[in-house]
Amino acid sequence: MNSIPFSHTSFPNLILRIHDTLRRAGYESYVVGGAVRNMLLNKAILDWDMCTNAPPNRLMDIFPYAIPTGIKHGTITICRFEQKCELTSFRIDGKYTDGRHPNEVQFDATLHEDLSRRDFTMNAMAYDLQNSCIIDPFKGIEAIKKKEIVCVGTPQKRISEDYLRVLRAFRFSSQLSFLIEKNLLECLINMSSHITRISKERITTEIKKLLSTRSVEIAMPYLCSSEILEHIFHSKLFSLSKKQYHHIGNVLSKAWANNKNTALQLALLFSFVLAYNDLLSASYARKNKQTIIDFCSSIRISNKEHDLISTLLFLSSYKVDETWSIYHIRYFLTHLPIEHHNVLRAMFFYTTFQQQTIPTLFLEAIQTYIPKKKLAINGHDLMSTFGLTKGKKIGLILKGLYRIVLKTPEKNERETLLSLAKSLH
Ligand code: ATP
Ligand code: MG
Image (cartoon, rainbow, N blue to C red):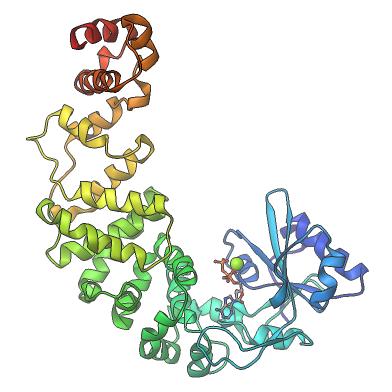
């Protein structure tokens, strides 16, 4: 046990209440996992995990308003206002035979056994709220001090139980700027091809976290030497040199510092991969469309994210230079919803392999852009002013007016547009 730099006041009310409720019901409970690690690192805690010796069949009685999110695995989720805590009964995982899940789980476990099933030593600590101390049987604090990712137990055995741990190690390295302990790293490199056994959902959660940090460059040598992206995206295009991975890492780190957009991170990664394989130019855009669809369908992202990534890649394959007029740029921007224009700007900015700087005209076009739904008149105005009936003609007039507004935004006034509509009509 160790004295530690935080006290009860460091914990949200929700956690203290859960602990208190369980204590009154005669059970122990501890804060575990990433929350303890992040408290020691003075980092924000987004989700809280607790564990308890209360058996799964008692959890919903004690917390009747909880959500039984994974009751089969002894987990319930307790929410209060903005806060959320996952509470899990102490558990030992049985044999793993598929490289993904234990064949069965057993609940009459001790805290020590529960901690020993966890992946890395920094994630296998518990905070004892009763005695205000950390329980650290695997020397997680020492690993944190050394900024090192160390496996709980033998890497060979622990990684082959659940191959997602390969990606989790890289993800933590990226998020925390930690290096991976030598024996563990050797094992991760040897076993990375087994990542394909893991579900797309679990891979996607980790890959998104890995790419969305300010220190993603730390993980790049690992991604390169393990070839894990080639396995995840089923593509040799990700087989790049150390130097190329290093460059991608630097760009992604900077991009995340300025734009917290995970779709942009993925689009930048894909864009560099295409560029390093000499596949990025407008003439390839059509062909690349299928490649991007393939990349996106190797992971589990929403249709919205997929659309944004494809559009960013498609648009950024064009060279927007001095030969473009502001009208052309504004027209180009119509391909993306206005809320993503700054993301597109960032995409251009960071894809410096195009050896271009963003023309000031591009920025001006973004600032003066008027989205179609902000056109000062609509179909009803046209019908009532010109006695038109609903139909194609109205659409055509509105389209013509919108083009005029893209060229000259100052014309976006009701009277001006109605008189212009008269000539179009
Ligand atoms: P984050 O801050 O991103 O939430 P975390 O460490 O809390 O990081 P989670 O994925 O929320 O990570 O998992 C909570 C805890 O559960 C981990 O700290 C670890 O103890 C344990 N854990 C999660 N996934 C695994 C796994 N695949 N193998 C072993 N233990 C795991
Ligand atoms: Mg967590």
